[in-house]
Image: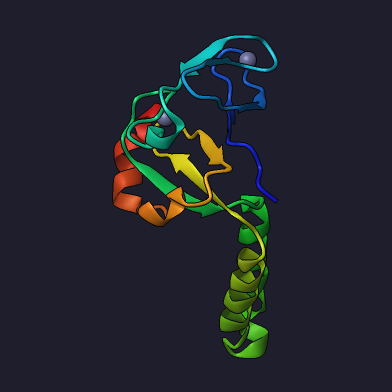
Length: 140
Ligand SMILES: [Zn+2]
Ligand SMILES: [Zn+2]
């Protein structure tokens, strides 16, 4: 199930969330309002720098609704007093189990673009690091 490479982000013009397919050496625009988003050079070199904002740092995350993850953790925390702390590891496990089922996305630290369909690339990147994220907070 090879998906074609795509990029998803919130458009800074219309604020809609949209996804576009990425091609070699091609400009791409917002699918909702046609606002220009960026331009790729080669897809092999796409993580040399972000085609939208030229940021050179990326992190990986699991491709599922972040809310779901937070919710699972929250339920775990709420249940702590009743289960004497057993629920936290259980829910962390559940979280991990859920996460294992979903593909990895690569995210740009600066503009938050999500890159899908680059099956090998994510080995080069690490999950979100808070101290790097802080540097880019002002751009979000
Ligand atoms: Zn737009
Ligand atoms: Zn970017």
